Length: 376
Image (tube, rainbow, N blue to C red; front, side, top):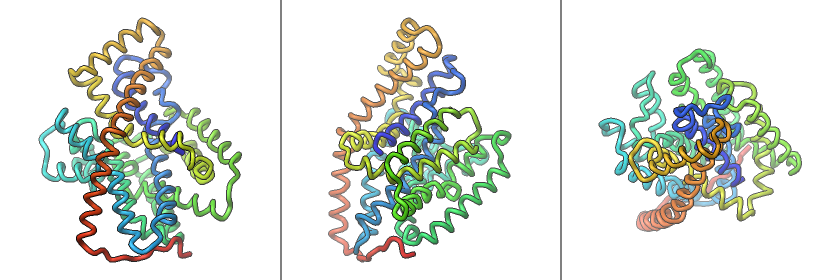
């Protein structure tokens, strides 16, 4: 599964490479050259994976006295050390797009509520300026955190999960009828259907429910990996050519969710896959800063970008090969930054953060309570 997570992070990167590098230089092929996975699609697939993994760890690791508190601590250690590191670096190097309101500062730093603030503070216009330049993807971490908060209680009952899943799907359908794509301003649709937790929680629950279904009806590996090939074919046929809400997207994500448990079981002990998966989070968080340094600021990396553009024109003058060469060079730089970030920042910062939280919890008694998954 780690390879899939890295691929999804690379798909988000490639969508931004298209928007900030390829398109401004006229290197437009068909639609976006997004590896068959538009950035918005990739985020929703990430939510499915997150729902599955949270379902797994809650049952396997935290179904015991004190499990809820330990789960919250583990999730905080996973999200905040790297996020705060990236936030501080971005704020110091690139600043903010405009003067910050105190609520902008607080919600972007602590994440909780930043997705709703980004969507509705300046509605119908977006308000991603609350994040330091290059870190607007933090809105998706805010959505993740909301799911983490409710998951220990919601996932106890499959009946409750199904009710919430159906309610979220119905809400999403209503939103799509009120603000259909194409035809509606994309900012308005994003506010209600892309960044709004009630309309995206269904994707998290899809990951959980697929795991529950797998426990009763296991899928053989050959079928799961065949399903993954079908997902890839479906996404490649679209390649961002259609509006976000279409039958191809939902077909792909449903097949992906169904195949996910078997793929996880087949790959969970693969060291290479796990290593690549560990790079997905630093790649996801740092590539925005990298693109700002490559394109928008007079930095040494900006000179590197000019060299890449110049050499690519000489080596591959045709549009298609040149776009691929540029994309590959940016991906290679992004992976280098991710590896450095993983070992020089994320791991030591997470260890320090864990030590602090453990110390704080040892000073203050914690009410210990068991959790059970599922009850019905």
